Amino acid sequence: MSCLLLALAASGCGHPLAALDTAPVAGLAAPQLALGVRALGTASIALKPTGLLAPGFWAPGALTSFWERLATATEDLTASGQWHAAYADLAPYHATLVDAPREQYDPLGFLPDLGLPVAPRATGRDDVALFKAWKLTTYKPNPLYFPGPDGAKQKIQAALLAGVKLSPGAIKGLDHVLERTLIRSMEKVDTLDPNPYGRVEDIVPGPQLAIAPPARYAGVAVRRRRQFAWDSGFHYGGPQPTDGRPEEKFGTYEIAQALGFSATQAARIAGEDLGVDAQTTHYLGPDGKPRKTSSGTGGANGDLHWHYNRAAAGKEDTRIAGARVHLGRAETFARAGRFDSAERELGIGLHGLQDMTAHAQITPLCHVLLGEFPDIQANNPVGVFEAALITEGYLAKYLDAVVPAAARPAPGAGEQVQGDATGPDKQRLRGAIATFPAALRASLTQGGVSFFLAAPGTTPLAAGFGTDLDGDGVISPGKWVDRDQDGKQGAGEVESQLPDGRDWAGLPAAYDADARRVYLSATLLDALDAPLQHELAHVLDDLWSTDPRWQAARSHQFRLARRAGAVTFADEDVAEYVARLLTTP
Image (cartoon, rainbow, N blue to C red; front, side):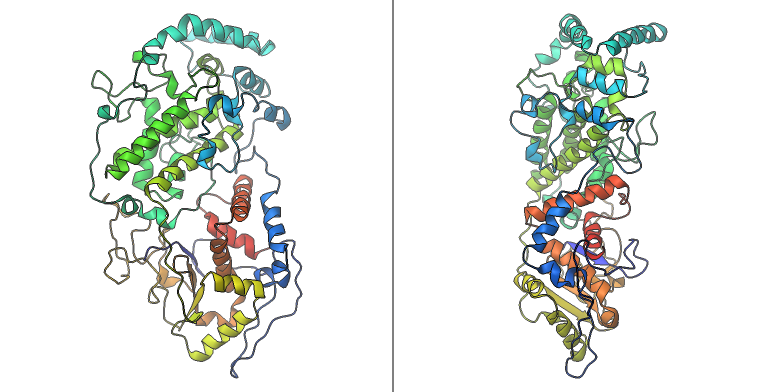
């Protein structure tokens, strides 16, 4: 049984959810009269009519209004956890983000097709807009990309910057002259190349495995909730921070893992992403050596179209065109069992898209003059945020293509309360469920949600919660099945564990979304409010998952938490955050 496993551990769980507050959901009034039920002479379960059990939560129109409030909360596009913007006044900075309309460089709508939660804004700026942003900061451009001897290039750069700072529009004239007299001629060999993004025949092939994509990406089946996490240094990430900026420890590697790629796969994607700058991709050039892919000025110096838009206005941005090519190749490789090659193609395609959020529609000259200015998070916070969203969208699009959503098993029929607990205990739980608001009870019934009430000593594992990875009909404790055949234990490859490594056997309450089954230990019956509401939150999150209004609300709220630094990548995934959101004021 392959499951989306969402669970709560009462103690030592590694989440800030061990103690839950069952106060009403924010903005919803609830009477403070406890609900009690008598069943066959056994002690009743008193549930507080708060939060998800509050009648007001299920009043006509209340749920829709709640979703709308969550989806429209104000968002600060410059905040990013511990990172801060370099701008004292954000309004002028935001004004620099509006320049070329997206249709001018993305006429086929590739970016919207990635399912981005917000329309990109930083991808359209030209040289003048970026120079205006630079003038708002105290950043001093370094001569990192300026050609020539150190002493001379620093003086020339300083002189040019002084003129452009007085009149940012002057950059257009300088651009025009250098483009026509120098840059275009140097990259002519590339513009005439019939295969600007390399040929499939020039790829150093990876191994071919006799497994299907769902087996390769076993972790994806249990971790498809997007993270909306971001930070600086996004070409690679934590294992290999940006050169010269060691504090940048978040990027493609972490985002790929959040989507369900194993650590090995995430490192492969991130490594090839960074390899575009380092000329170490799996493509060979005409000389049989790795193809020149860095941001040089043509031919032997590297191809500009990987890093800047070298297409005419109204045509598809060369970085988007490349991302489309590499995504198609990745899908083809995956279906042929060449997953290493597929993952490398994803990294190459990502590089151009990530550069597009930083370099937007600027020319190489602009980047030369401003040094690393557009690549640093503090100077371009919205661009870095959009780079992470585009990264997620691109990787998710690949996964959607090669690992289509598996048909959910039909919800189990029969008794709503099952398990090996005593009859009186199960009757107590039935009585408690009978006190739920009618709309909640209807949702659970229509969704086929059942409850497994376990006798003391019966763990979720013993109750069948877990994943039978090898198909032997048994969920074995600690059994590793190398589904992706990479020789390393990855997320979703241990039958008795959740993707984060916790063992099912130690959980007193849990939810299996594939079977739509809630596990509760009978030991919780005398203090059921907190664990029951938490698991109900997971249930409702699952039942609402196909409603675009709920998707918008949950995604927006999780982004807000990320931006405020209230949730970090290591702390909590979106499903656990949403459960906390639904069960606390």
